[in-house]
Image (cartoon, rainbow over all chains, first blue to last red; front, side, top):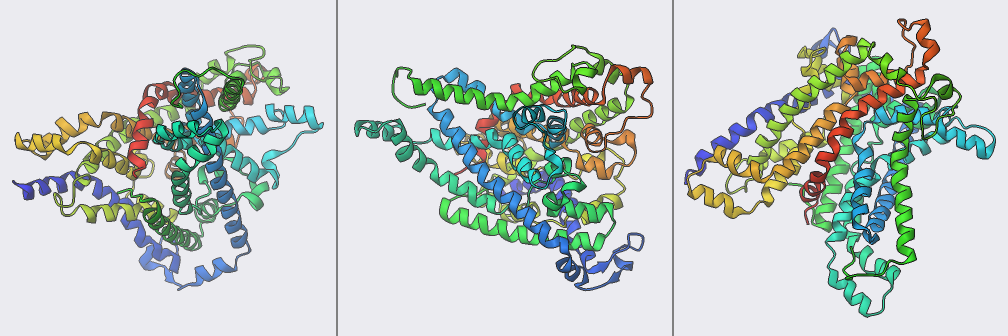
Length: 296
Length: 292
């Protein structure tokens, strides 16, 4: 029934999008060559000197490397843990709530910060955490002196993780809420007949019910472990906290587009991309195997 | 909701409610604070007296903002970007998601396309090669630098594709029997049925365009070409009192309240469209992303 003809139309529909994917997704892959060069922009890729693995060797020798890798993993793993615990807790709380109309309101409000940019939120946070800000007013009232949150290597990662949780927990709770509504109500009835109280039901029915979703989300997050959040950190940090806040992405931006060390920046960037690719591949495989998850 | 019919409201229920109110307020208070700050007088802001309500209520910051042409230039760039970029995203997302939702038996090359798309989503050349491609195409300092590299929002394509796949097969079979071709099927059947999902992905892409600051920062060199978020970002990261500031204004406002006003105006569009679209995205995202 003209299936061949249909395929032609499908190719046509995909053509414009594929064109952009090739230009902005595939062609930059060839630019990875820069990582093996002492790249000078005016000479281009064909004119610059090839240096083999020098950039990579230099990258591993840099003192910064360990610190940056540590910061990236530290911040992103903390975020990962918090971004499961807090949304699950919120979803459970909403699930247990009796007042339906209020529930709708709560949901609308807690999803909202997700849609605001880190530029906006960093603007708000920077003000709130400044010496005259509302947070320091509280801190001063309780402890007697204000804290320089965004200038302290101790506080900076904490601010990063907490503000990330604040922005995303409501939105991340959506998936868990969906999983909660899919739990078979007869399980609760059965538990009630067996004399289970509220906590018992939560522990023995609700939590096991969303466990597969928790495992799935955690597995998928493993693939993102090298993305500690460029937008957020770039907008919050300053030279005082490079020690604790510099992550791979902010580092690549600084050495590449600010200090013009294109070769080194590309080496670091492509390394990150490669490791990230392998991690995503593994995590998707695991998700497909253990949670029967497929995105396509 | 638990299945029990009418339960009595107990103390635990009230406690849970209170807890949820606290959590919700925590989400809202920083936004309320910045609005209050923008509406407060200079000395009150400088002294840190503003908490939840404006102190020495004044619209001065907003009035002053009207005279800042840089803010309006940036606002204009962002609006243009959302309209053009959003439209491109809208068309391409639908055009790509529809054929990719077909079974392999119906569209043989589907898996090859999927493979390429997912590969580019997971693996890329990194910042520098990406930047150089855009520079070599001479897109920098044009609106196309902000709209073409993100022309295909791959995550949205996958969301919509999964939504299309969940539509009942019978409908498309019936339409085929009635002689509908692929384009007719797309425009007359799939798109109308997928409106909630399309609303969701459109919201996502519009929000992404409105919120993006990084590409504006590295791809736009002229100050008049930068989008709003990049402009705000400059205020936050490198706050400088502009040379055009008049002495008389310095008496009446502080940089702090002025920046607060700009932040409020920048988040306003999101706050305005969000309530209308948010009812869609819950069903849209859960249907599209988690398939078990």
